[in-house]
Every structure is written in C-alpha cells, then in structure tokens.
Image (tube, rainbow over all chains, first blue to last red):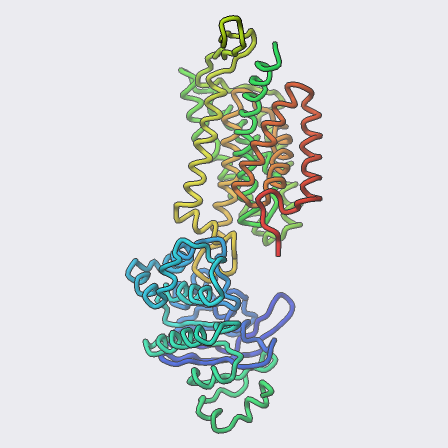
Length: 232
Length: 308
C-alpha cells in the first residue's frame, strides 16, 4: 500500500522540526531517507507513527488518512516500526516482546512461526530477557517484533547501527525480502554503501525540508547530491 | 507475660499490618511504575474502601459475613471507579506531568476526605467481621519433664486476623499471576517499560493508564476492607497508610513488585513489633529514618533499577 506524506509540519512542543515535508513510499520499494544528523529523519518516522502531533499537513495510507487517528490505531493499519536504538521492552522476555508484536493486529501462532523461522537464533532465546541479548540479536528481535504485524509498510530507523558485518548482511537481506513481498519500506540509514546497495529511491532531507527524491541508480552515476546533503 | 509469648503476639500483630500494608503499597507502586506519577491521594482511596465498606455492610441484615463479602466485592469497585474518573478529569488534563500530578492529587486528597466528612461524618465506625473466634496460642518451656506446652494468659489472636494474613497472601499471588501470566499484565508491563514503543505497537496507553490508576486504588480499598473490622472506618484514616506506603515503595524500589512486598514485610513487621514493645511513634521514626538511609546509600531502593 502506498504511504503518502503531504506537506507535514511537526516537531517537539514549540520546536518545529519538519517543514512542509512530502514523501511517498510505494509498495515493493525501499525508500531511503538521507540527511545530516538532526535533519529530521527520525522525526519523520515518528510523525508517521502518530507519535508527534501534526501542526498541518496529512499522512495517508492508500488514500485513507491516518494522521487523525489516535496513535495506538496507526500500527493497526499495518504500519510497523523498528525504532532507533531498537527500543525493546528490555525486561520482558523474547517471547513476550514477540507476543506484544502479535497482539498489535491480532496475528496468530502461524505468523509467530514464520517470523521465528526468519530469525532462528531467537527461537533458542525465547525465555531470555531482551536486555540480555547481544546487539545483533536485539536488532533481530526488534525486526521480528515489527514483522509480527504482517505490515504493509515497514519503517526502519538505522537498523544496522553498531552491528557486525554478518548481522548487517542479515538485516539487509530481511529488508530486501520484505520489499520483494510487496511491502513499502522506509529506511533511515547513515552508511552510504548500504544505502546504494539497498535503496530503490533516496529522499534527501535538509533541516526539516524535503529535497530531491531520486532513483538510486542516479546517485551511483553522479554522487554530487550526496556531497551536497550528506557531505560525502 | 514472658518475653517469648509477648514477641509471638507482636509478630502476629505485625503480620496483619504487613499484609494490609503490602496490598496498599502495591497499588501505589503499580501506579508509579506504569504511569510515572506519584498519587498523593492514595491513602484516601484506602479510606474510601473502609467507608464504602461500612455503607455497604451496615444496612445488610442477617449474618455479618453477607455484608462483609458484599463490601469486599463492591468497595474496591467503587474506589476504582472514582479513581478512573480522577484519571480522566485530573491526570489526563495535566498530561501526567509529574509535578502537576502531585499538586492535582493533593487536591483530590482533600476533595475525597472532606466529601467523606460531609457524607459519612466524623465518627469512627466498625464493620462487623464475618467471623471472629478467639484462638488461644500455646507456648512452650523446658520443664522437669522436657518440652512442655501451655497456654499463657493473654496470648491469643482471632480467626479473623489470621484470615486477613491468608487473604492478603492470596491477593498478592493473584496480582502476581495477573501481571506475569495474562495479556493485561503484559500490556501493563510493556507500557511501564516504554510508553512510546507501546503506542507504536497498538497499546492504548491512555486506557492502560486509566485501568492502572483504578486498579491501584482498588488494591488500597481492598486492603482497607480487610482491616476495617479490626480498625474501624474514619475519614482521616488514610494518612498512615499513605505515609507507610511511600516508605515501603521508596525502600523497596519504585515500581518493583518484589521490592514492595519485601519492604512491606520489613516495615509492617517492625512497625507491629516496635509498637507493641516500645511505642508506635518510635516505629514511625525508625521507618522514616530507614527511608533516609536508603535514599542516601541506595537511592534506587532494595530491588529498584538505577535510573540511566
């Protein structure tokens, strides 16, 4: 399903972060948000989840507005969120974290099996508290918890931050698999090589303003935009 | 009475106090843990439990157990419902801001207390216990023929006091099962750990807050219904439970269930024992001193987690 952000303005309290930002995430496509620290990438994802009130503008999923729903109903529309820093329920067990994910949209044991078969290491750790997992396993759990929604839109905020290469590859494979299943994926990622290998399109954000949105192939040929907005 | 029997008596009194305190403090701890707000009106929900129990039990004729059971079932519901209203119209309005909530619940404290004074009056009234048999307790000593049992004069308890202890243990176990084994418990724990992520996974945090606030008040009211056949209902009876609950929650570690129960045992038992042997005032002084020591040497409490 297509997720559309239409000229949204939002921020934290009095501090406005996003200014008339518009974006479109299409099914079967990985859209990568790129910009400097503090540009508003995480804020964009939080706004989509309804965690920040919009001052103006709207967010819609397949034409249906989701920005006037109370925040807890947004994920029930099929939008799953893997927050920055994983944000697991640290004192809950792996099984309980997954259960919270399943409860979101009332998914059954079948979904649970499917998700656990994608991350077999979690199956061995079901009774362990989430905070005792390694960084890579925590990221697996955060991703698994999101996939328990069987989402049509998946938001990932720096999912490979601080992970070892094998784990980065696993997460990247999962993200590709989700795209190939026809989900719309929005990815916030800092590492340029990961962006170039994963993304279908890249949306640049600068100081809370939406800038160019380009096909990744364009960036591979001509990295001048990267130079302009990320400084590489 | 000799020291031994006297100590046993003090321990029994302390256990009754500890049982009721554990339930009351657990309500306060739950509210703080999940909602991160301090409910200064918690003692008034305790008082409400006792006063409502009197209103329910006193007009019911027949065996006292009927009125008592009705009070046990209904008084926590009434207190919980009032708490839900407070949550909606006070806490939600100040957006659960920690400082504003303290001031707001101080207001709620006086509203409930003065309403009780106007409606219920200044008298202290008892609720008849459902059963109340005197149980003489044996003591032993080494006599000429070895170990001898006898019944010292004054060493006795009542079946109702033992019931309070057993009932409190039962309620604590039920609470533990709800928190650790049910979906509602999972939702409450997830909300406690990370409110924003809970929202992002479809948990209606606002409704969870209402439920938790009502649940916390209901626990205090339940504790009060258990104690009111022993202590009598009075519109000012909420002060001590509030103070002791704060002491327990701080010593046990804010938001920790295990810490709350352990600290309630510690404070309740020592309060009972010191009150019997020395003076009730001294026991409060010692308990408050203990809080000061905990705050200096282990600010997170016995089982609390260090704040990051």
